[in-house]
Image (cartoon, rainbow, N blue to C red; front, side, top):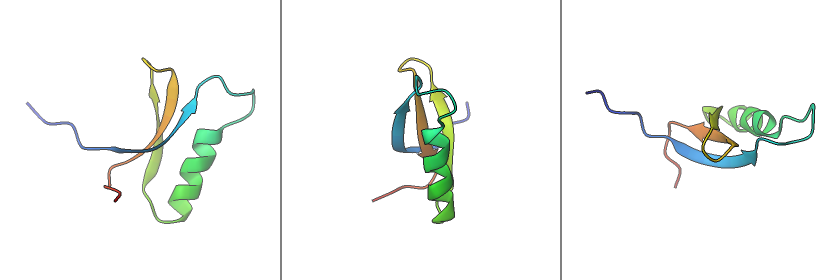
Length: 58
C-alpha cells in the first residue's frame, strides 16, 4: 500500500470567511513568492482551509 506524502501545515483559516475574501489563497501565494511550494487544501472535519507544503519547516 502506498504511503501518503508528509505535509507540513503552515497556517489554518476558517472556511466561513467573508464573501470575496480568500485569506488562505493569499497566504499561499505569498509563501510561493518567497520560494515555498505552498498550496491550499480543505480539511472537512475541522471546516478549515489549510495552507500546506510538502517540504519540512524547522
